[in-house]
Image 1 (cartoon, rainbow, N blue to C red):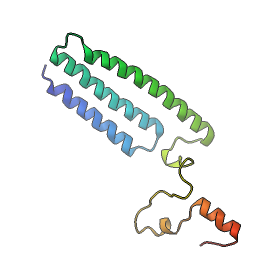
Image 2 (cartoon, rainbow, N blue to C red):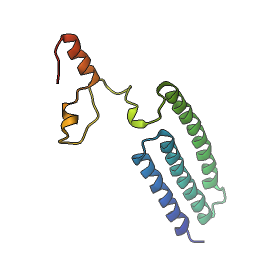
Image 3 (cartoon, rainbow, N blue to C red):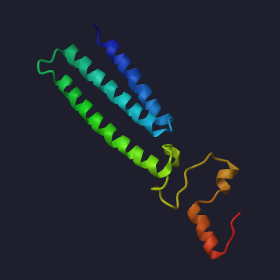
Image 4 (cartoon, helix red, strand yellow):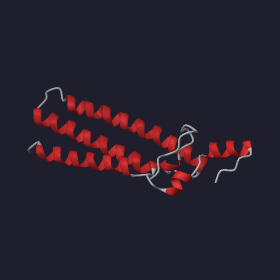
Length: 135
């Protein structure tokens, strides 16, 4: 078997995983995309191990380590997701802004009047305390 076939399949799997990480907003789908990327790496490791006829089978041993690390990562990730869901009743990544700096706000679309006129909750609370009303 040629090495090109598994390498192309692995590149496709990795590309789909990268797209899933960058485009998805659901935490579970992002974790699944990371697992897809790790499986693409595993496919490459095993394919090149077979192609190079390594006597120590180091590619397959490294694949076992990656699988163990992926299982641990998935367990910790799902525990975090369940903890967030218990507190917020949502696993949407866009809604998780509690740990962000209070003075920063996510960048909106340039020229968007609603995004430009919006104030942060901290700024609105400070204006309410000082007696100033911001439109």
